[in-house]
Amino acid sequence: MDDSETPPTGGADDLELSDAELEALHNLQLGIEHVHRAYGSLLAFHHQLGHAMDRMADAESRLRDAGHDAWADELRDQHLPAGAVSDQWTFELVEEFSEVFLEELDRFESEVRDELADGLDHVSERRQKRRVRDRAANGRSSGDGSDE
Image (cartoon, rainbow, N blue to C red; front, side, top):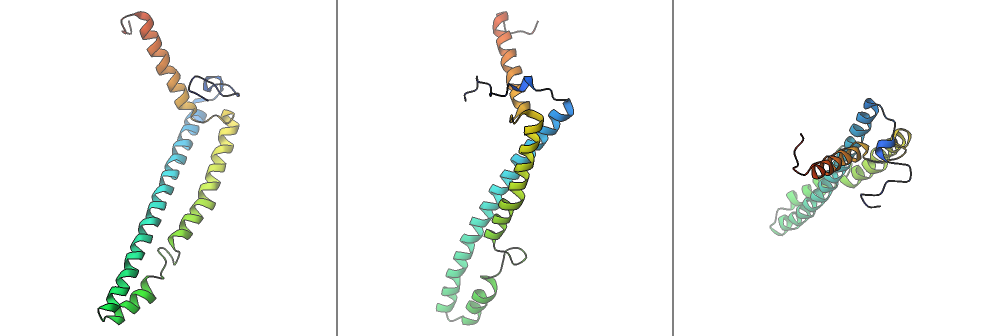
């Protein structure tokens, strides 16, 4: 669907939403977008910590090569197998965030949007786009671009 098409359920301007409903939908969708960004940050954390653990595993070998078996053993036995948070490894945090928190929140947002906006996403932005384009079209039709 390109920008000029409207979804089969009608356009954003066809929806009968109160100001409070429109604002609630907008804030819910912005919140969801930030949750997805947080998920991306969590994935980056997972990858960074994985790379760090690989380097520490290399350090264990180098400590052993240098004759520091006690430190190498402590690194191998205490630090490398430890979880990042409450004995959970980062892949477990990623899975729980994705499969529990993110999926449930996405499902909730979708239900609210289906009920209030016939499933239409970004209602506020669609209305803003129409206003901006209408203003531009009206400016071109007056010839000088002024708002007189």
